[in-house]
Length: 404
Image (cartoon, rainbow, N blue to C red):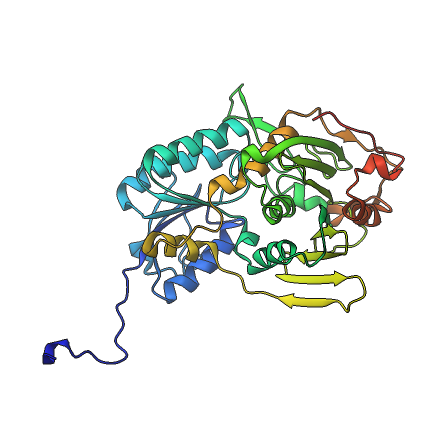
């Protein structure tokens, strides 16, 4: 062996950091900033720009690199031309997702796009077409898709652990106070003006099924494997609102896949108590419950002791970087949000949510901390997940079917 061929035993080759632009540095963007600090410290990323309505200060950018090296602008196109990032992270209001993602893709950048990826099926398809044309990729921010628990549930089901699958139910009962809907002009809206003084309206679809508890629906579809646009056969909806908003805050949906699977989600932001959402796969000989926010799986089978498993989770930005560097499979590519977007489209085009009158709900607390509570709703969401039923089928006196 030639001496020059001898290398130190622990020598490693470090890849260059991936250049990243963050769009929307506040709100949920704070979560991305924390993750970017971690990955900057590991040498995986270099934050080259931030796009926000007002510049971030030195304290907000602390840990993301030297303050003077991070370019800032209120105009994304200008910022992208200046910085040429490999990845653009978009964490902005729902109705801006597609326009901003298109801007990034057309500038040659790959995208990590917060959920929901689009506020309409047309927007989703427009983005999909642009990605196909450009050869760029889009990872959607359904963080639960990075959990190994999802693959575990799929494997347990495929192995026949609970016998023949019967259907999948999901339940989400969350508490949200008045300040939740006061946090931004688009919160709780179905549509907003296209711009200051504009007469045209754009879709937002900020309802409980499509934004705060969107993970429950998207993950249930992913667990079933029917998560692409063409996998949806029918959508049944019941949309309600207790708060003084446009969108729904208490709703249920039943999706039938083209493979004849039944998937339901019952969700509310008017819960009696805050609880972790979950997904349950029903089988003829047992059930599997996925607590997707905790990466925890519970297997229950007739005549056997319950078994519980905890699983690791892969960060979606790290997965996107590994895809670009090493060809790793994307965990949450845009097309795997297709079935979810079909349901979102049904919500978007459905009649206005039914307003629930006082008496169905009662206020609790005061001022910004006041919340509206629907008595019995926690048990109702659980019953829906257990029976794969809509609210109107569970004898809720205030519930009636909504055409979707």
